[in-house]
Structures are given as structure tokens and as C-alpha cells.
Image (cartoon, rainbow, N blue to C red; front, top):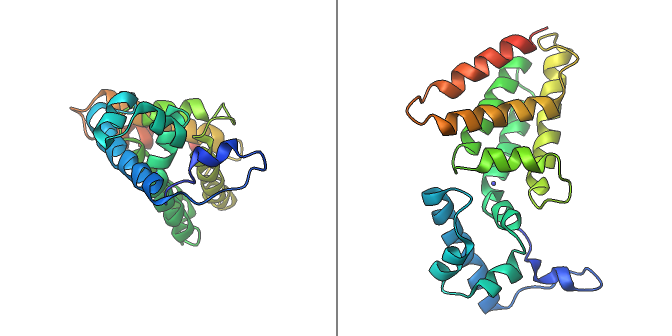
Length: 201
């Protein structure tokens, strides 16, 4: 699922202008991101934010000054994965096999969503909530996927009535199913193959 995002300390600025962080605030921000990644990897995205703050050596108030809620922290943690997925979609945009390019990108999306327990569920929820900080991840992913889907549809490989919103929900559901069955590493690929059979024109 994902460049660090701009600090939320500027959110209270009446003019909405983004102010550069002080050196100590930047250090706190980076430590919080490092510890959040570790905590999410160990305990999933519902890991205790108080524990994240403690590990980073700051108070919970400092965490909330940088990240006003859990989704804001998740959005920041996922920026690297997001950049990777967007870069890969750009590379695949001119592939000779549009349907194969779409499948490869969806497989990468499922892989990234499976990096932290709870990511797939959160992304599914954020797709219906434009006010969520995670929409900063889901919106560019939807736009990137839509371009690959359109090419596959134009090539006659995917049904015209398939939408990128439905397709992303399906891939998140596959990632969620795979998360619940860690003893079956092939499950995601099997479910993706089944899904794609239903999408073919």
C-alpha cells in the first residue's frame, strides 16, 4: 500500500501555509515514522499509538501534533510503497500487453497491501471516505490503476463495465483474505486469477 508527508503542525495555521519544521520537530517526526513502521510490522496497523510514541521517546501529544489520527500516521508510513506503485504503473503504461500490465500491477498492489496487517481493510474503508488521510494514498492509486484498466479495455481484454473502484475493492479483498490465511501463500494468486477470469471481455 506507501517521501514523508508534510507535517500536520501546519494544519492549524489559519492561512493554511506550510511552515518548515524545526530540527527537533523533524527528528521527532522521523523517529515516530521509524517506530510506527516497526510497530505496524509487529502488531498490524491497529498497534498502540501510545506504544509508538513511547518507542520514539516522545509523548502521545507530540505524536498527535504530527499525525492527528491513525490514518494520518498510516498515510505517512505508506508513502514509500505508494511511490513504488505509482512508478511501476508509469512503467507499465506502455507495455505491449495491456492486460498483462494490469495484472502485474494488481499483483504488486496486493503484495504491498499485505506488508502490514490491517492495510487492506483500512484502504477499503478509505475508498468511501474522501476526508480520510488515507485518501491521499487511495486517490492516486485509483488514477494510476484507471489508466492501466482503460488500456486493457481498449485492447478488448477486459469488459467495458468494469470500474477501477470495483477492481481496487476486489484486490483489497484478496489481500485481506490472504492476510487471514498466512499458511496458504498461493491464495492471493489463485483469487486474483479467478477474479480476472470474470473480468475478461
